[in-house]
Length: 453
Image (cartoon, rainbow, N blue to C red; front, side, top):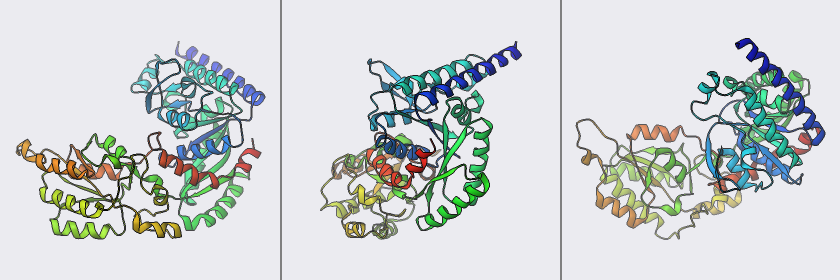
């Protein structure tokens, strides 16, 4: 019956949880579980910094993403294909975690229809618990300390009875909560997630505030520290206040190509160069106004993105002329170099100098590499051939080797999709991963973090 099934689930859950806590205490320091207050707050970036810092302090650091959603296919040690969470691929390959296996790093995946199958009883709670705790036991045996990464906010996974708070409690882990910087709204979100963690029987070890306005870092550190002490009795440490670094929010042309299912016709040497998706110009004007605006923008943004319809032959010709003029004396960078990428990290959201002397010296020589996205959307009553770019113009694009991408869709729709896109960390963008670690790690108090283990 349903009642007996629910009873068995509760018994199994409590039994597994107790055994997990015994193992965690006996074999190693308490695991760290990184969770966020909501989506897009930098949970994976904080996890990368924690991983880098822990590797400097422990011989072998294990990593598990107990419950994953977005997955990729990798090749296991036996040559067989394995599906794992996308963050597992990043962490294992970047940090060279050869001592743990792919399946153990991603024990539960939730692909399409997973929740329906769970509700229908095809997937049982016990099987999820066994997969997670089995993976923890094996990774812990091969590691000196264990880092766990959650999925989304603390409540994600509740539909299959495996939300982040519950999983952290199950694995005997302490939680590090990541929230966007600020005071009022940040604490509001933290309070809700903190309560859920406590209700599940886990402990919040500390808080990392992310993307804080640089000139407010010290103020936020002071007042948020007081707030945590007053409201949570000093039991939760403020582990870090990380100033915003806009470079980390930039996407590569490869990211944008995947997002839009487009095709880059030229400029493949810029595939891994970074562009700010918030600085996109939708071109609907005439050539003269486009050129005036583009020339002005080139003084403050070295990598603008232009979006226009594929039939705007005049704009395409003007862009190619501008591209040739501005890049004629610039030698191409290797595909994986992200020309002047280290300096670009010091720029603000518009790409202008951020006050650093080295950046100010290098800013004038940063190559201009504006890219154009041509939208080949279809309009009712218009012949399809009349909405495609002219073949000889596309040959000119290839001859100039200019970064021009052809996509399907209307200009406004494409523009909106680019604007709303949030770049994620992945192994194919090591420049941004390295930049994230270099920026975040110094802002995390590892002594405070480890003293509470």
